[in-house]
Image (cartoon, rainbow, N blue to C red; front, side):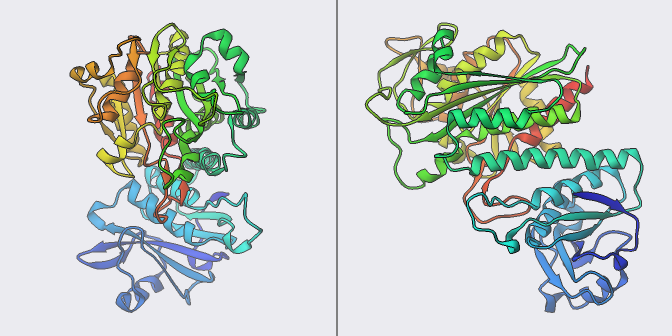
Length: 488
């Protein structure tokens, strides 16, 4: 829960008072015209308190001049570099550290709507805990109510809070799905989770294709990848209709609920993280839900391509040939390059409905992490759509880097027996995967988002980002939808 207050922050009955601190000429200074005077007095002893104002730094101190039990100083980095994302991270780091408390107030550092949006999002995104499998522990419960101390009010300010709540709920829902154990989240269970997520949403319809319907529809990629598992694949279509608007966007998500690599078995180290190989589908589902809750003036159809990639006597083999929906044949040279096979089926289905543009999102290649690390995602595709994604990511605080689709690499996808091979040479593996997907979108404007590293944080938490599922891609895709709606 988040709300606005114009009250004196010193007099607020909250557990914690959060003040954002930046670095000015090496000295930590509080940001915001409503910061109580005693904060500056405390910062006179910043060195003793261990306060530097560095980004993601959170320090707690007594609040003798306030009703709050504790003062929290949240670092935003150098003052001249403070922007929406550094504020989002600073506040998120603070609320993440306040688990177990019931309430907090955050002093808005700048009195404008963009800053309010960033601070509200950061506060809510940081207040997250996945506790499905833990014994009850009140000390780990996410921070409860948040008040933003500001002179802003009225419909525009309230709209920013509403949007922040919808966005954070979408990100949290994505994180929850990614963090769920694969024995609980398999294709059929994921499909049921999708039904639950959209229940009661106005203008949203859901269709689930089981293995029989997939066979009848020619979805050879999903069936091939899923045939090694005792738990068969599903294709879930979640469609939000915005009414009279002619604008439409399709989102396609990779949903490998567990990826063992199949017969091309992955090394055992870190294989537990492969429960996150459905992060793309989770992000698509949550984005469609958020679009419906915000009532965006653009119709959005999400395609969740769900399968479990397991080795068994019925699993697909290297050298098998699959027929993707629409008739393209693919020689499977590596069963661990399975995500592009299920996405191909989803992309063909999406393009059949003639949307204005298509985005697909997937934890697709280890090559993405080799190229860009664990925190920066890749985007490639049609130049215009790729650039829209980069701009949307920049506006929301997510990091997406534009990558090319070099024509000369296409030769690496040639097969001796089929239309395409599912892998080529090692070099440029992320780009080859993008080129493979491009074969299934025709002339439709399209972008492919590879979030292999950023979708799952196996390192310590930072900013508003927890350990485990991160929800990467939701905010960017939602911003693309909002931008498309605004152009209608």
